[in-house]
Length: 322
Ligand SMILES: Nc1ncnc2c1ncn2[C@@H]1O[C@H](COP(=O)(O)OP(=O)(O)OP(=O)(O)O)[C@@H](O)[C@H]1O
Image 1 (cartoon, rainbow, N blue to C red):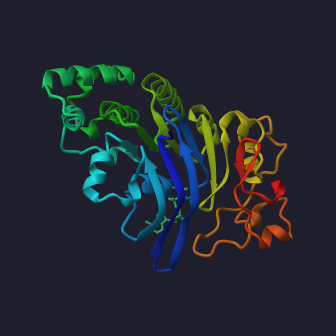
Image 2: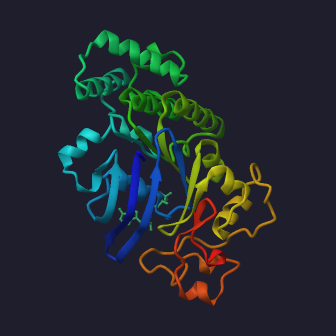
Image 3: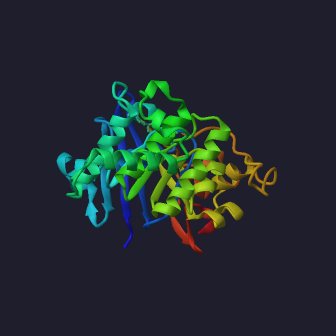
């Protein structure tokens, strides 16, 4: 059974300028122990997807569709039922992880609370001494230097990389089934980013974590994702195994993302670089939403919206593959 099955998920935001169609009929599945990278430029709907799955959308959002997590549709749960799933079922790390920590409590108290919640939910006894040992050993797992010293500190006394490791450790202490990370490393410098990504990948294998990893950077995505889902203007445009997609991208948008990646791409300079930006989602373009930027666009692309179709062992939304 899939751990997560998202079906026909659509999200709109009400704004003074009109209704933003941020997600349009998104469907995908994630299996246990699998990592999917969600990739796309700013404004493609990636964060909206993460917030919708975590049921943390802001009040001006409306959504429809189903989010089946371990056989239960999260879209139908009440706030109190959702609270039980949050943390130990689904754990989310945001773009600015520092905001997820409480500035007035020491790191030790916040990690202790994570262990306490997990134990409470699984009806296990909680012992502070044991919890402390577990916290220190988990901090060692996330390669945190001097964990005994670090836990006595307050969030503002830590660097971005240290906070990121604390959040990963908190996730592990809660033992979530699903770990959602929204651009967790984009604020860090490149070396720390690489360390954290490698760490997440090792931990995924060690703890059999399922991960949804959101990033605008396909190179970052390729490190962590078993699968990749490329999003454009609120829609999935391509989804498949990471190794297939980066060696042979089908959708012109994926090709464009790859052509700008010298580090991993044999396509560098060989595929058209995409100019322009993601369109407004208040009035998205007719037909294929990518047509104004696509080097292969035809009349059909301007008029008819392509469906997401199975092409070999992946899904692609493009008339070239009709
Ligand atoms: N709270 C909100 N109210 C109104 N519109 C919103 C809100 N949040 C996001 N949007 C709009 O929804 C669309 C999708 O945004 P979203 O943040 O999900 O994209 P993203 O791919 O995660 O981009 P980024 O990487 O910049 O976060 C954008 O057009 C954005 O302006």
